[in-house]
Length: 537
Image (cartoon, rainbow, N blue to C red):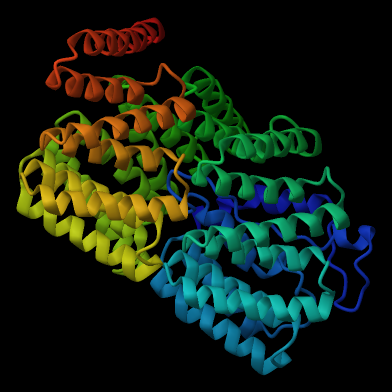
């Protein structure tokens, strides 16, 4: 019930605004269309769409749906509310029968093409996507889309809502071009029906910007995020929780670009807004603590990161229960921190607990389960447990393959990590094959200017250097450095790492003068980072 109470502020805001949904035969004029919107899920990586699990619930709650007011039976309402409660608690397996029952009752009471059916389909689609059942979720959303288009017209905001949810499915599957097309259609509908300054327009801008960020299209993402932020500040006020969402996502973008000085103020402002608007123990506050803690971890400010991540975990356990998927996210973040600190036993325990929660909530084959498997495999690799690491990397690969396919960027990421393990073991031919395969996938999915492409390129360059294939290694080092400088700027630690790798090659080929220049530059980058950390302490 704590999770249900946590949702009330958003519901009260809409209730106090006097929102009423028009009957299905009404013409979607601007006046009536403004009253017909529902809340779309907000997307905020690095947890890749999971962090907004509670916001997704709003799509399934009957009193927030365009289909309310049609005389549903008490049995149907009870089924919908049971689903909502179980979903909020993260009990996805238990929620599934309730959601399916709600759909069956809706069909029995209203027939196959009523708006109430679209609502039930949408809610069941939310659950299927949360469980990683993307194909099933897509079919449910497509059916809901047809019903709403027929009942409301192709340009109604209720149609835009389903388009956005279907786009999230395609995004999760790595079908980025299809997701982009759906987001753009939803955006056009909302801008035309609601006006360019409406808060729901900002939602679609936010989701499209997050898609672009993941693809490495940073300039486009920044423009959309800035526009969404401006809309929300004007439409909702500068201290609204959705403003915090925009600030948080803009911070994620700047973190990807290595613009660290700009990130921390955004995260801190987002945290302050959420604490003031929602209270210090709200799950959204935990989300902000996680992002700020993760930033400090990446900056090696471990002493600052740990209390934030521990507080986020405590909030999640209290507000949502110890087995909620968002608690699994906090466990994973804290586990990565402890892995970095060499606290292997604590890290392993946290990863194992996160795995158990995600398996129970999302099923044994889900890409979020694969994410934790990959993190645990990296831990085992650092410990020299090569056989255990290889087994987990392969399980993660099989899981990503089964859930989103072998052409997804997440598949390529694990291929690169497994290649690193093989390189450690001197299995150079196998490592080379994995690196090259990963490069092909990344090029097709994200393009050749993406940071993930640079990582695989740098890994392959290091392999060629180890094999004394210097002529093949040098252009790869140069390419990796160029990509990273373009994406992160010339003073990012990952650029320093790339420069050091290239310098080692130059030493090996007798070009010591060139090597020393690169090493000096790498040292200067690291020193500036260290000086910055001391200033912040």
